[in-house]
Image 1 (tube, rainbow, N blue to C red):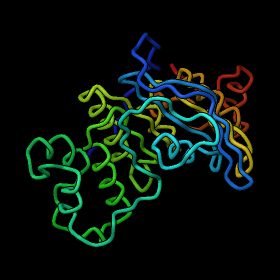
Image 2: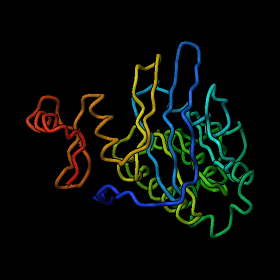
Image 3: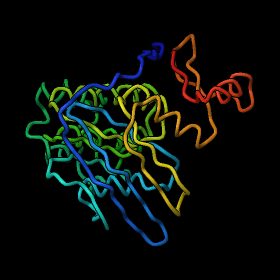
Image 4: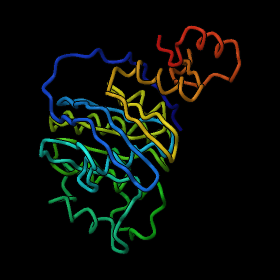
Length: 270
């Protein structure tokens, strides 16, 4: 009943911050697939977007960071608390939503938890519902709630926008920013939604390569630079809609598409 508003914000200028997580060059081989991740670091209170085509190793690297998979070479050197939401949503079978939340939340009925987590995710009216009866979007929001309700140094979320509509995606982006700021933590978010990542991220980590065969993750860089590398790789240009402020893909071979490709500006920012 209300219009969807896209807030325009310029890419955040990089500034000196305290390093929170550093990882050396990392390698992992899974069957015929080879993943190489360049060395990089995550700063305290930073939002890092991780993106690239499918089957390039994004989820594999997330599992290495979360301690679910051991790297063949490298991997995180510090022992820090990471709250991890995997790509595949696992809710553990039957039981009420409130019982599922109670496993990680001391008092899921508290006003604090209601205002900070339940209300932004629209879960208030689902507490007595059986988990097995939840839709894909409801399960996703529940998994995000569990992830963000934990005390952690880094919140690592794999495709949190899946199954969510555009309003819910923007709400989740705001919630991730709010939780990480409140806890003086950081986030690393894997997703395929350009709008979602554009709104959430301060820097980007691009995955390139041959899907299913070889993936390479580049050192995290400024968001505009990262988006340009990713979009050039997939041959798509984006402009910002002057009416709504929403990033929109240009029609292939349109005047705007050709103009931006000629200028090497695949990700357009006013």
